[in-house]
Length: 442
Image 1 (cartoon, rainbow, N blue to C red):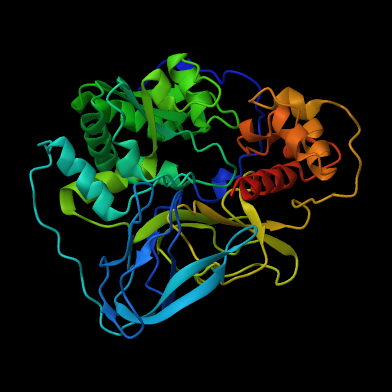
Image 2 (image 1 turned 90 degrees about the vertical axis):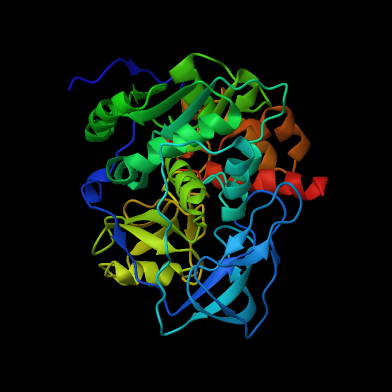
């Protein structure tokens, strides 16, 4: 089947070594429940969830263990059957730590029962929203915004199109690719439910051209889903940034400081849509997620379904561990937007898209090298920014000046750091500047 028209990336961006061949042909494997999980109370944008269990309580897989606080929050559920040991601290990628509910696994396994229903029927809008909220679904591409809020646009915002973001432009990561191939029925169903919830007529699944098998398969299957189309995108980083995705697919420009709703669009991640289908149809909570464990320094790169709260150490060891015990770096997320870590106890969260082990040759951190004023960072920036100028202000304690020249407009895609001939850690500095600004606001 011939692929239809290919939409182009609007401005800036870069072509990256993809490294996806390590796992793109690896079907999703289910990782067994670990001995213990540390489930963070804050895996989302907004207020942390409030624990409703205490040390000594027995909990079942899928049981709510922390309630949402306020409108912008999300419920948290137990990912294993076990006994609550208490509240513990776990380091998070970057700076800071998580407050986590520590659960020790029971020896007995209990299978979750699923009720058979007619998946051709569409529930009422409030039923969809309530089940999504009850399941604790958030944006699982990394943004972490509570999905029940996104499915409740203000009355004045008339949404006409829902886009499923299947670009997956980060190197190494193949989570969305595998879900597109293996769980497309849930994906189409989830998109239909999102359309119903926000009142949209059109649904588009946007996929980069480096996943031709997924594009061809879904374009064929889309014939059974009126109002849904599959759109191919050229392969360019960062096509997964939602504002650029909207510009490429619909030729609509989201105004500065606004959300996609401002141009009548809602964007959801592939795995988010799949989870919506499972939550609405079977009332399944988010207790696991699919992630890619990859890298040239890893023995057995894989795509895994992992219980939330599993440690990075358990995940890496399940994939055989590093090839060389000394010569590697661990990144949680993708190599462009993820964070380098040195603590193996960091838990998998709802937003963890990958764990990547890269070799010393691939990892560069040259903080001491000066900027040579070549301007390449500005040429590739998809937000029309001058990262070298912004970071100069940050590093010289001129935070207000960095804000004036666009610090908060940065989407942290990492294109600037990748293209920099001095290999300066521009993204780390940009993130630090944002963190300082948020701290000042509080």
